[in-house]
Figure (cartoon, helix red, strand yellow):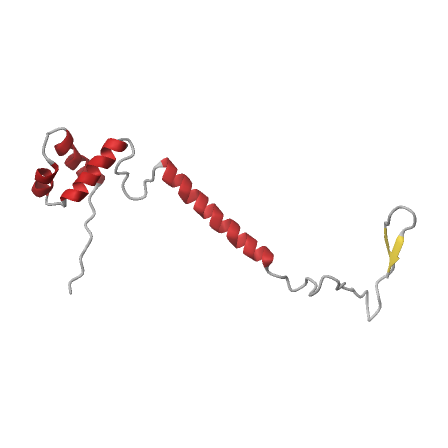
Length: 128
């Protein structure tokens, strides 16, 4: 089996082929035969040129403003999903249960000095 190679046509070639049909009054089949391309493809090029002549045949890497916005939004969506997944992962230093409290020791097996934590205003709370 032979592998078919897809032909790439330059935007200039496409515009010239469309011009044969629109300006020179060739029929799509005649122009396609003389250019050795598929008539369906030439018909699609003519439709694209008639629908939006400014952005027809942008070439490789040149996207219409709508396509550029879609690409940018997809990239942003992908980045936000990755950030969300990172935030879902439990950090090694986080408690394993919600009721678990970490205790930090001051020195050689000693608890650190008292820490005063403001309470509801009536009495300061002391923690070891």
